[in-house]
Each structure stands twice: as C-alpha cells, then as structure tokens.
Image (cartoon, rainbow over all chains, first blue to last red; front, side):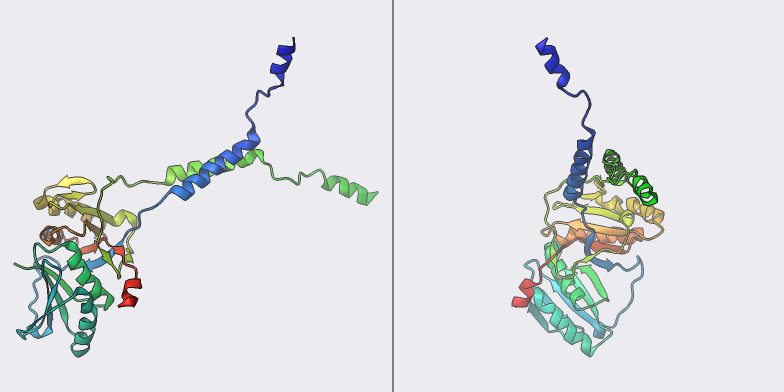
Length: 139
Length: 148
C-alpha cells in the first residue's frame, strides 16, 4: 500500500510552465549561433566583350604586377619604369590623377603572380577613388 | 458600495501575463525562423581570401549574387558545381539573363591562386556579359596603415 501511494504523488503532466523557458532557450541559442556569411569584396565592372577602346598612351598609367609582388609603374609614353611596393600606389595615383583627370589605370598582372598581389594594387586604386581601371594579363 | 463594487470588478481581470501561451509564442517564433532561414549550400573550404582596405559590402541582393570559386589548380566551381574553364560563359549566361542583368559575380579565390586562372574566369564572364564582378576580400585593418 505504501508503495502505491508514493507513485501517485508524481504528477503525470508535462510541466507547461517550463516549456516557455525551453523554447526561448532554443530560440536564443539559434539566434546567437547563426552566422550569416557576409557578401563583401572589391567591386569592379568589366568592359563589355568586343568593346576595345583606343586610348591615348598619354592617358594611361601602366601598373605591371610582377610575380614577386613588386609593381612596375610606367607613365604613359615615357619609357621609364619605376618599381614600387604595392602600398605606394595610392599616393602615386593621387598625384598622377591630379595632373591628368582622364587617367586610366591599366593593371597588368603576370600569369604567375599571386591573386593577392593584384588585389593589393586594386585595393590601393580603389582607396584612391580610381574608377577607370583596366585589368589585364601580361601576354 | 459603488466603489467597492468597482474594485471587485477590476480584480477579476488577471494581472499576470498568461505564461501558458508564452511557450506557444516562443515556438511560433522558433518555427518561423526555422522555416524562413534558407541556407546556401556551400562546401566548407580551407581558403584564405586576400585582404584589402577598400573591402565593401556588396549592394546586391543575396539572390543576385553568384559564387564562383577558383581553386589553386584552376578548377572552377560555380555555386559548388565543378565547371570546365571553357564552359563558364555558357553556364553563367543563362543565370545572368534570369537575374534581369543584375547579377554580381562574387569571385572567390585564395590569395595564392596564380593570376592566369583569374584572368581566364574574367574573360569567360565578359563573354557571358556578366560584367559586374566582386573580388571577395577580407577587410584589412587600418592599424597597419596608420603605423606607416
């Protein structure tokens, strides 16, 4: 008899008051742990196919990215080549574009150069608010 | 007497928040988020994007962004499907049309990928007409810049 009485004392219902706590705990857990991968990057607009435009050499700043990450700067027609570190390009672009507002940055990258070297140059140009950028590969 | 009656009536309304429906509300929220969350299926890859100070959030809608992943050896994955390099334009062109020409290609490549592969993808994208490209980069902290 004593055994039976003890069993009856245990409630047969699911405690509904704790359900809310459980649900909110789950909700908060998912809210905190969910990470959305952000869509970010450096945006460029490629030229349309078959839209080669002849540009006067005077308006072109040649930036050749070597496989070792050094950038060779060549100003338009002048045959002079100036090797620089990528992080100097922002200043170079700013001073060049002040002289010639129609300047185009022609970034030519060596086929073996790492992606990050090209990105470093593109980054500098975008920091300097350059919008006329051409991306090519050294033939 | 009248005031006492008013008091009695007032106390009839429960002043507590009904805690039994709280669970329903929470579950409803939970189910809502579970249903509306769409995960983009993407393989987990071990790659490091290049860093750039000019990194910006893309201003395109999520569904207008196409993921193109370029591997070290030149393998190209479009939304996680391996695509031969010369067929990239054929794959991208219909997607570009479908997006009402709003498509932005998120070009994802490890920082050490040789540029020849990137250039190949760019030419294919040009051929497909998808001219809006974003090179996926991580934001480089400007601390290093201030030191210089």
